[in-house]
Image (cartoon, rainbow, N blue to C red):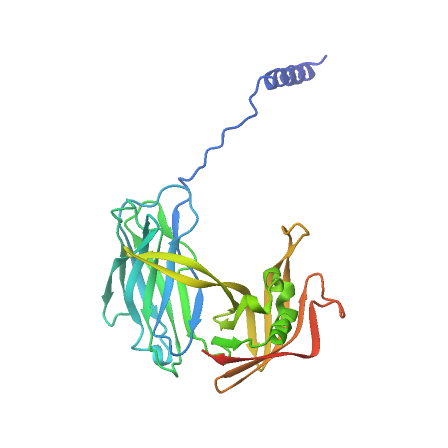
Length: 342
């Protein structure tokens, strides 16, 4: 045997002998030293109705490993690009966070310092005496013009975080606010006064909500709410059944009876009288357990006249029912419901 072949053979033999006693169960230790904590804005953009008097934006620590900082942090902020009625009107009103103790929520304030005309300054995240760390999330409350015909937009940016080791600002750091000017925006009420009207509503949406499909007319109060916000909407069906709800805020406990509700949520687009909703719904098996989740789409026409919103639902489809004749709901005439401005 040649020397090279003998050396190679000896090396392989040693490897094989050594592998017989190697422990392949590797201990896993999270290496979090190189992954700093990140403070991020909850959203990159948002909107509200023209007459909104305030707007809150959440800032929170992203998912992380390890404890939150035990020392104060300072953030610089700027309110910029103020257009229309926002100029001279938008400032920070307060910065707050929540602390929960024995099922009671306490709202506490963070200090902020506004400079100049109030469109720049700093926010200080102090260490909460009960938490022993800075809060994991807080909300910035902006003042808005609050006029019925408000127009315009503004941007908000965080910068220059200081005071904490291994803490950085993560994306997004900028937020843009605009007035929600679509004519369908806001909250609308529908009164279902007859069993026939309720059955027509179930014909449209029953396939998207097994809970709704199982209800009878006597199970509801007859009040249906449609809420259209920034890119998202929901229908809320109020049930006749009530439950006792106990809330505790800032040390004060309140007990109330509230109606149970069923909600159908979706993203939406409304323009030129056409309304499209997109969301997802659960498919239940014979045992009542969730068997699948499918995306759905609702096509409708709408019209806003004065304080009334008329919606005519034309088609409901999901991933399994896109073919003509196989829709969850379809009608050339459609099912029409008239909502009143709330």
